[in-house]
Amino acid sequence: MRTPEDLYELTPAADEVPPGLPLVAGLTGFADAGGAVQQLSEYFEATVDPVPVAVFDHDELLDYRARRPIIEFDQDHLTGYTPARLVLSKGRDEIGRPFLLLSGFEPDFHWERFTAALLSLIERFQVSTTTWVHAIPMPVPHTRPIQVTVGGNRQDLIDTMSVWRPTTRVPSNVLHLVEYRLAEIGHPVGEFVLLVPHYLADTELPEAAVKSLEVVQAATGLLLPTDALREQSRDFLARVDEQVNANDELAQLVRTLETRHDTYMAGNPLRSPLTDGEGEVPSADELAAELEKFLAIRRHSDDDA
Figure (tube, helix red, strand yellow):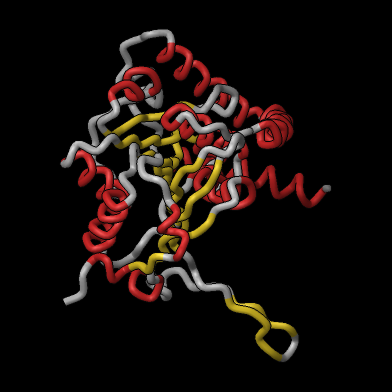
């Protein structure tokens, strides 16, 4: 019988990990509104000098038929193949402070074994706190700062940062299971759910990356510069504003979302910042119609460029 530890291999760098580091996690593969987790992963890859300390077995954990890897073909022969990776690494923030980073694909298989394996690594490295980030589409306006729902057992983060606190049933991410198991043993764990404007959910939204880094910094004390991403976000949102202002129906939608958001944030006892005046969430068809209109505008703008 295979054990959870069979799912990964330690690298020589594992012996150099000091005890008590914070762990930051974000896995791609499920809902990733605004490309928040993907951008976060790319940011870490480019800026924190990650060194793998444990590499998970993708052949055990990945469904290739559902998420086929890309292979490169040059005229008459194959030139490259890059397998999917799921890696626990050690990185360093702007001032050299080390932390652990779990990045890569979300496992398709063996969730319980993967969770047990990750918990064994958390115990091995005496991880101080675990923080993970994901993002979902919500009917909120792009003209307001991205808000978050905070889960886990770190009440300080929940009290100061969690804007929307629903009671609901949702499809889970494997890190939900990890969070659940960590909470059972009293390990400090925080989950940040970014509430991304639904009509921008299929874009790579720089503001989502900025918000991801902000919440990670708040939870861990790490220093992660965001100046370049903020500049990208300003440029991106300026282009969105131009397109919204050129479409009366979309502009009206944004104004409606702004009103709901501002009323909720002002303390009106609505059940959430996402509902209309009668407490109803816009239907999936309504959201899809508005999103299609927005994407059509973007395609037309791109064609004219």
